[in-house]
Amino acid sequence: MKLNLFATVACAAIALPAMAADVTYRNDVAPLLKKYCAECHAASADAPSMAEFKLDEEKYKKAKVGPRSDTYEHLLQLVNGNSTGAFMRRLDDGTNPYAKGKPGNMYKYLGETDAERAANLTVLKAWVVGAGNQWDMNGIGQRGDMPPITLEQLRKMKVKY
Image (tube, rainbow, N blue to C red; front, side, top):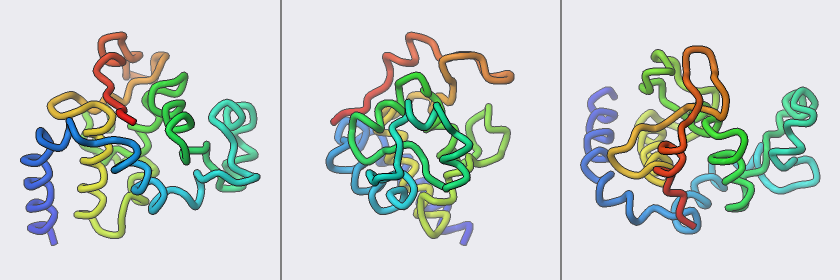
């Protein structure tokens, strides 16, 4: 199983530079989110925008309802709005230096196998930051030993529609 994961990660690393320019919300990210995340983050009467979620996080967490990510505009609020970094932290596989080996709480939902999760994370990383850029987990403000996101880091974000 570890060999399969290694092979998948190696192939993804080789494909990432070519993929980065081509990954779009419409073609790659939306179908992935619909398949793996819609149960808790889809448009419904119970799914809040990020702003609504922030107003009553405990209520939505108890109901197991996350902020909407079913449209490009809603997802951008998670990726580069006031909650910049949350998307990356929650989906990280634990390899980011700030993660200290602990995967984010939503990583497990990116697929049924390690290989599938790794491949889907590669797509999301390419969409957010492109090939060769750090998968920044920083937020707008300081978070523990993690510094706030910089303007330069924000400018590196790709997030093509």
